[in-house]
Image (tube, rainbow, N blue to C red; front, side, top):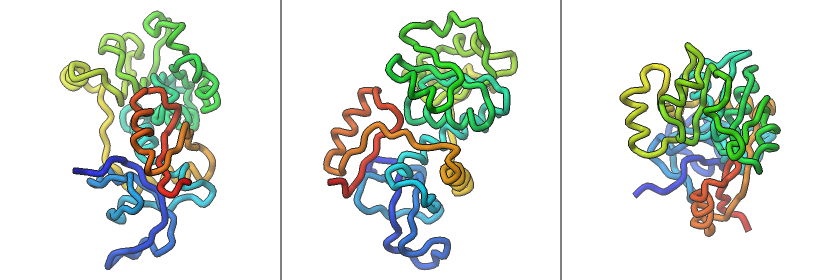
Length: 255
């Protein structure tokens, strides 16, 4: 049974034979789930290629909230959408972990970003860099008289016909969240080249790219709450409410 958790940040306390890229005492972070490991633990033993050095100007807590969420946003914007300056980007679920990074990255690339969120998260999404914010409790996306070059969907509450209606003629949609197996199957079978589920393999090159952005303060981690290791069940319960703003982080030595 695999330990829960995907992202890790901490200090190197022991290295294996042949490891030369890291040394004892280095501060590192990375996505270890894609390498078959879990992160919710006081100590983890992982392949060196899963980790990169943590920027000195961010905390372990901030670093721990980065890997999977930021990598997902990065791949959704670039591999699936080829975002560029001037692109019209719609981010559905803009206040969550992936969403907050997607808004920041899209803004960094010079896109015009429209974020979709609830009323209480409007200011947060604006602070992340959204040009426009749509309150889904007040506005029906399907009634918008607008088209987008790229849609990043973290919610999965839109159908294939919805995506196609909102996309420009050559637009693409990267789906992160899906509303059940029927939604997933429809994307896989009928989405074609323009509408796809985001899938990627973590690698040091992409992690280092994100580390550089963090160090330059081009992106930052939005943390909703942090919990101690003993409070892990409470953290998971909170995540299951789907109300988290940004990331929820477990801190093993939190008092």
